[in-house]
Image 1 (tube, rainbow, N blue to C red):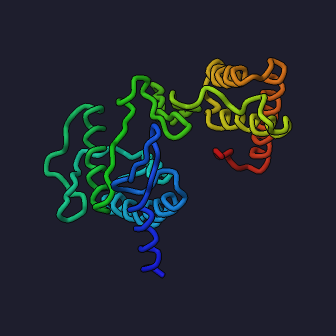
Image 2 (cartoon, one colour; image 1 turned 90 degrees about the vertical axis):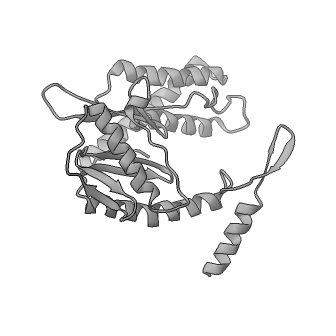
Length: 260
């Protein structure tokens, strides 16, 4: 079975064709983007193998981690910064330094991130990673799929992880067109769920003005797609009611509302 799977994967990887500007090309290397086989293989490699090995490396070095999350190859880790560790590629482990790394917080963050990158790339020769930090972005917010995350740092308290809905600038400026052949009830359901997604992906502690701005951007997208002001109002009300119902059910059951 393993040999059959290897042959199938190699055949898919080595014979992937795509078109661009009216011409056809053979992809030189790597898995074909968007194909289900690529996603399945990536999940196995990143979740079953890579994830476990990275966890073992961090635990062995006693690196305190507060968050480990991943979506295929997008990984977010919140750790306690270290000053006395350095990655040793020969032993595949962290060594304890004789002299601690003494620099300011920003330089220390960059140092720790670079040492983690080395550790991650030691797990498999086929995987290479780039590191993203808050400092890499002008607003100090780290875009992660459809969410921006960042730390707020109260003067008299521990740092708090904040998050809000995020949409890439190259995303379509339109949603499902109002004139499409789909039944209006189906469009109402889909677009209402888009409202819910924006609210779930935004922390309760975010200001109401910012929440309003996120929903206003979606309303503009709907207006641009041919919906009337009345239809936009109905979609917003439906989405907000659905979201409030989910929050109420979560509170009654004593569980936290998780992102869908």
